[in-house]
Length: 80
Image 1 (cartoon, one colour):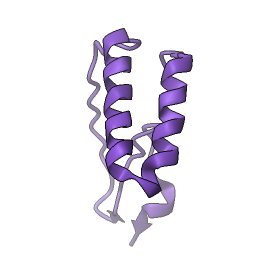
Image 2 (spheres, one colour):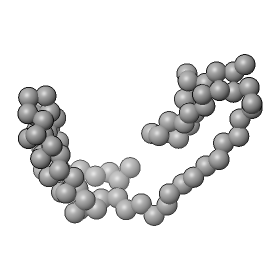
Image 3 (spheres, one colour):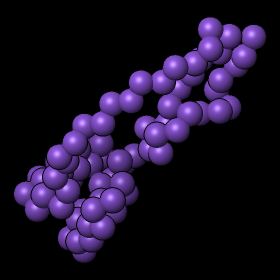
Image 4 (tube, helix red, strand yellow):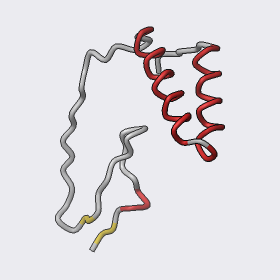
């Protein structure tokens, strides 16, 4: 959403991903370094924490919303 692009961040992410299976400890250090790099640049500053209320029928079960697009996960819902 921020349109963030940083070659150094991309490089660190690739290195951390590559190290994940073979050397998890080294990967954790790389992820931490990447986290600090991105945090220091603050490409995205949230100014709003949205909260929605959803009303569904008592016949609806297992209602869940997708964290990535905010809509219902239709394949998870069942109806009596």
